[in-house]
Image (tube, rainbow, N blue to C red; front, side):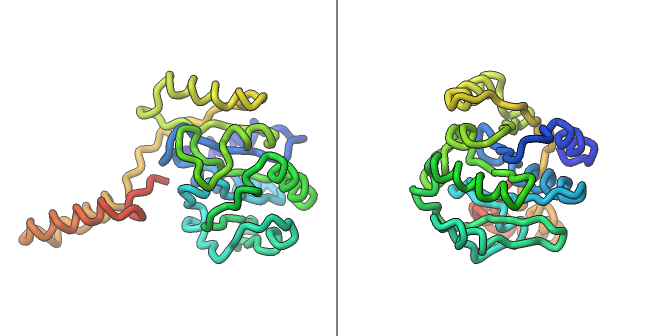
Length: 228
C-alpha cells in the first residue's frame, strides 16, 4: 500500500482537471485514512494546494493520526474554513471529531462545500465512511460519490471477497456515478494492542496471570485496536 511507487501510481491515475477525490472502503479498518493521508502528502510535495477532509465521523481517525484537534463542524462555510489546520508539511486538514450535523450530511450542502473549497484548493480529498457500516453521524458513501469528481474503493486483501466488492460497487453505482478504480491494501498491519502485548511479553514471563489480564484489557480498549 504505502511504498512510494504505489502512491505515485495512484497519483498518476488522477485526472488533471478533477478537483475532488473521495476514498471509501467496504468495511472498517481498511486503512482509508492512512492511504488518503499518504496521497495528500504526496500531492503537496508535487506542488498542489491540498485539503484533506475526514467525513467518517462514526469512526474518525484522521485527527488522531495528524494531531489535529479542537475542530468543529459548522454549516457556515466561513466558520468552517477558519478552523482548518495547516500541518508543517503544508497540508491542510479538516478533521472534526464531533458529530456532523444532519444538515451538513446532505448532498446539497456537501456540493456547496466542495465548490467553496475548490476555489482555494486544486485538490480536495474526502475520507468517506465504509459502505457497509452504520452511518449515524456521517454522510453515506453514496452521497459522497454523487458529489465527488472521482471515487476509489479501498479493498483489504485476504479479507474482502469478490462478492463484497461487487456489492459495494453496486451500492455506490446507485448514486449515478461509476467508481474510478479500486485500491488494494495488502499490508498485514498488526493492531497497536498486539504490538504492545508482544513488547511487554518478555517483562511478564514470571507473572503469566497478570500478563493475561493485561493482554485482555489491551484488546478491549478501542484506541489500541485500530488498523491504519
